[in-house]
Structures are given as C-alpha cells and as structure tokens.
Length: 337
Image (tube, rainbow, N blue to C red):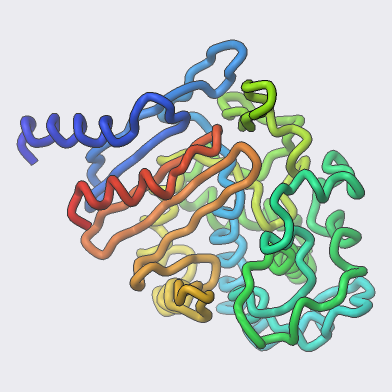
C-alpha cells in the first residue's frame, strides 16, 4: 500500500473512531498492520492514558480460550463431545439434567440454569446482592449461583446463550487435568502463542499496565470503576485480560492449527447452533455469514475481534464499554469487507 493511501486510510479510520472512544483499535491485513492506536484513559482519575500494549479485560471473549482447551482434551481422547456432565462433575446436580453433554455446553444448547440470564437480567450487579462478587475467585465458587435453579429447557432443545455452561466447562478442564483451568490455558495457549500479557487475573491483584473498566453513572454524570460489578476472578465464562497484539497472535496460531489441529479449528468456527436471528455459533466463536468472531461485554467492558476471509483482522477493546460493534462494522465497511 502506497504511503499516501496508508495516510488517507488512517485518517478515515480515525474519523470513524471519533473523540469519545476509550480503548485500542487494531486493524491487520494478512499479518501486516494497517492501523493501531490507543485512545482515552486506563486510569481516569490519574489521567494515565491507554497505550497499544495496555491490558484489557475482554469478558465473554474468554469463551474462545475455554472452548479451545476443551477441544484439545477431546483431541487427546480424554473426553468426547457426547460425554455427559454426570460423569465429569463431582457436586450434587440437584434439578440439573445429568444428560447434558459437552457439545451442548459448548454451543449453548444445554438448558443448564444460567447464573446470569441475559434475557431477564439487565445488570450483572443484581447477582452480587446475594452472592458477594469478592468471594468469586474460581469456577466452583459459582456453583451456589445456579445449582438450585430449575433447568431452562430440555438439553438440546434450542440455542440460548449461557454463561453457566462455560463455567462448567472450566470445572471439567480442572477435573480432567488436575490443574486450575487458567493455568492449563496458559500452558496450552498463552505461552506457546507468545501471548505474554494475557492471563486470568484477580481484580484486586492486577499486574501493571492493566486498564480499569469504568461504568457511567447517569444520575451523577460521572464514571466509576467496575470493582463491585463483576467476579473477583474469572469463573470460565469471562475474565481474561489481554492486549490487541496478543489476540492477533492467538488468531495466527489458532487458524494455523498450532493449538488444536485444523480439523478441530474447522469444527469450532462452523455453526453448531443458531440463535433466533440465524446468527451461528460454533464452539466459543460466533459466525456472521460464516465469518468467525468472538466478543464480550461486562459492566465497563466491551470487546470484539473478527477475522475475515480476505485476511482483514479487526480487534477492538474498550474499558468504557464503548460501542465496539458499530465501530467494527463501520471500519469493515470502509475497507470494503
């Protein structure tokens, strides 16, 4: 790309981003950076700016890593897609169906009671009124938040996005490997993929260079940190901290078949279920016209990354819960995707 064309493209993308965005935007084509820039503040009161290498929490974007970990165990013959939870979990399932399979947990068709049912709960902070968020530091800590609820529907009956399903998958990883799920994912994915800034960190013990996530208080017209709005540490459904460069590394190694084999990759980024709008879901990945992406949103957090067939890779993180989805679509339209 000629320098004048590159400069014009940068200007056009900057115009799309505007002045009120907080986070990092990265656009890559065939491994070459087209655009990468940080905006706003990682620490608002102290005016510490976001940088290219700032570490952001990406909420449910983490599900792609848990799904990859499960699929690796399946490749190794340590479980199967049709393995049922009654043979994999060691706590009283109560009303939860024992016939739920790993496949159904992966593609959100299990019907397992969801601790945060996004169809009826608007704000995750509602959950912590009964179950203090500061006590939630591993997947099994979340059991009381869902185990006494009835099934949402019969296993395999339909697709409904479900956070509990991925918490249970993290528990399955721990049961099979004998390791904490985040340490297993670090060994399987983060270390081999040179994702040096990626990990599952405790909210009150974050490493250096992490962005604080901020929520807007409409009544007082000010921002406050999300410390009391989400788990102290991930339960498997979300909670990984990462950078745009680390996400790019993940895509590179994942699609090349270097974490799980290419046949497994194909399965994971093919529609295994569909929502009511016919948007597909594989295992840990959404599909839009067969284009794979993963995304996340929690209080103060928004994230999306999409990998187009023409080699365009977009990665957008925000610690002010900006509308990364609209921005991503506008950037893709600009690039003619």
